[in-house]
Length: 202
Length: 279
Image 1: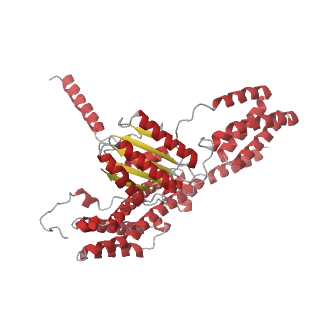
Image 2 (image 1 turned 30 degrees about the vertical axis):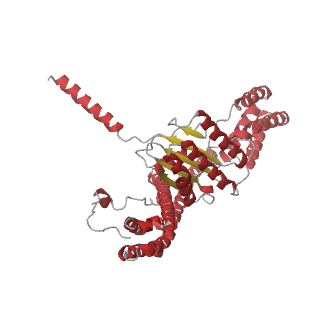
Image 3 (image 1 turned 180 degrees about the vertical axis):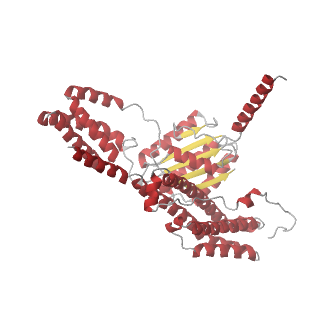
């Protein structure tokens, strides 16, 4: 009689251990991948807007060569990176991806700042439409990033809590990277506003 | 100063410092969702509010999509986009599957507005279109301090755009979740099953059979595994109690539902689409 109870006890212990965090890792991992795909989607959407934007600006401000080239280069650098969910398991690749996107962001903001000097460009309906679309896309990127950060937080907390971290180690689930603020130093120094150089062009 | 006085002064300073820190830049709480048009600035008159509410309620009955308007003094310290996505996430306008909600936020003191578009309507109302509605319909009227006309015209245009979109048909009832509708039905089924099975199999076995049967039925109807298990347990317990206890439980459960249906979101999601503008 005792042997039967012992066997039942052992089996129930095994059954409870086998789901000790393993099942939740599956759903958390899938949620992390899904929110990462959403982030990638929105970044792709932004990259798709860039060629049209460059063409419109070229129509009015053809001699702003350095800014236009910078944007085109940043966009092609972003386009050449093959990014999938595997990037989440490789912190170096993740950092490279983030740096490339940040470069595109800063190139775009330079382009929009330069376009302030061209009233005809600003009045162009096509340019204003692209600006609206770009704004919308930037907002979506922000929302997707925030949701990704929340999802990753849940996943990382699960991977690091005891006793799930033992299951995580057994099955190879590591913490995934989260977004950091790009260019923390650049943000903390106030930008210098300089009205001396460029007179307004037409 | 004596030691006691020094301590009192220091603790007072510390407390004031804590209060001062808390007073800095509190983000605004998401307002409670009670009606389709929420005007926290008392700009619109009662008649105007009623007209807008009626229009939006009729649209929801006809099409199923939910549009809401929120007018408040300011969204500071947050950007209007940040605030709007927070409100949209809390209010969950629109139905869960098609995600067909739209939220208009007007920050009167900031002179900024935003149209927040749900995932499912991003095809009908792309960012450009939302921007045009803001620039061409809302901003000119708002500049004239005519908020009602601006909002009314914007709503008309949004309704026109959504009406052209293929969405799942609006259901007759406005109950948001299927669980609320199926709960009394399932309890009634459990009651009948319990009485019959108890008579055939006796208390315990009847309870197990009816519990399992009701759980399987509930799961097949699609209420979700944990809810199905709950129904099964309820049926099991009810069979053990016996017919008289069941009759009392049945009366309690049927009295629970009912009452007016205040406006509430349908579980729709938002992805940050839409446009902002100012006047």
